[in-house]
Amino acid sequence: MTTRQRGSLLIAAGCLAFLPYDGSTRAEAADEAPPARSVLKGKDALGDWTTDAPGVRRLITLDDLAAPFDTPSAQNGARMIKRPEGAWPKVPEGFEVTEFATGLREPRVIVRAPNGDAFLSESSAGRIRVLRDKDGDGKPAVNEVFATGLSRPFGIAFYPPGPDPKFVYVGNTDSVVRFPYANGDVKATGPAETIVKDVPSGNERVGGGGHWTRDLEFSSDGKILFVSVGSRSNVDDDKSEIRRADILAFDPDGKNERPYATGIRNPVGLARHPHTGQLWTSVNERDGLGDHLVPDYITHVEEGGFYGWPWYYIGDHQDPRHKGKHAELKGRTIVPDVLLQSHSASLDLTFYDGDKFPAEYHDHIFAAEHGSWNRARRTGYKVIRVPVVNGRATGEYEDFMVGFVTPKGDVWGRPVGVATAADGSLLVTDDGSGTVWRVAHVGKK
Image 1 (tube, rainbow, N blue to C red):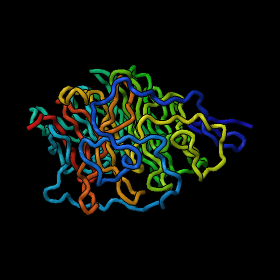
Image 2 (image 1 turned 45 degrees about the vertical axis):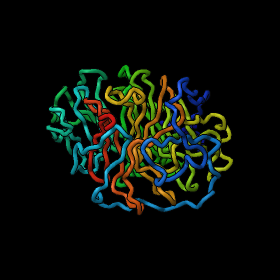
Image 3 (image 1 turned 180 degrees about the horizontal axis):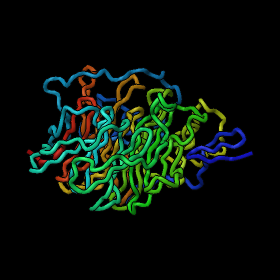
Image 4 (image 1 turned 90 degrees about the horizontal axis):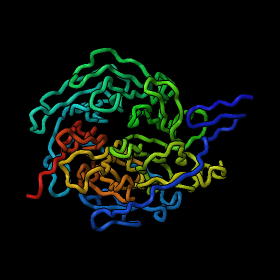
């Protein structure tokens, strides 16, 4: 008999189980509270898009979790329309939204290069684009395609970390590649070099499928390359989920694969705290249990941590579709730091590391909520702010950028990526309208 460990699953004598984790903890509450402001709690916090507005704060706790199948499982995908005349994203007072770039083809992740350029993945076009605002007018004077011929690219990361990278890494749906890079390059100066050739694929044609986005992040010291891999299914626990629903770790050359954290249904976005170096992720949780289950979440990532999928969710709540399975894992599931409205489809996230927003925003998380389909009344379709104090989330979050849903419930914009620009503004990608939005702090008028 042989035992083979691959990623987040252990296969031995026909038994399939996630590797256990001993010592789960939830981040303790921060010592400093966010600025005094009313917070929606309980059922009020669950809400829907009609309760969204800049500055609305929500706190969802374990006590607010609904019972499974408390409501029917909905099929309510976004009805996408062209942006109506006069429609515009809404942000808190003192901020202003402008178009940074438009006419893009499925803009997804956006990251700031060390020299200040914005690198953008256009996933369906299979390319990476470079945008540069040279004169500070809030528009890119340089708009160039850096590389093409990629396979649904998503994540982008520069290596080594620091001011003088030598490579830019790109997360294809089925591999990780890198290009030679020097500060200021707007065109790849060499071909793609495959670093990880067999990332579990989101491409049905090659035996993959399911969640296809692969985000990338390096550890502060550059010794670890993190790759996010979502599940193939909603809640299956068969062999198709090997090396999936986890965050994988590699050496920078793509060798020495190991699971870093497991039981994470779809860890779409990865980000590193600018001071502590702690890895964070934003997660799409499972569907089919009703309008208010299971909350999506944002959390710091524990090395060796187990986050429940598919047998448990948000701590020791067992998924009724796996009743009685893996009782040995009860008590080992980490409770995430910040619970979000269920089915919001939380995608990319970033820490604000600029100096142009008010002090209360510094080092806080901004996260893009792409929007629900498995909910009778919509959630998501917005950008949220997650207060983080002394490296720890307070547990609540705030609506920051809303307005992508019409009064009739139609949708014209869907946020995906967020990045702090070189000038201290916030860049937000929107694959619904093919736009990169720029949010600047202009002060009260």
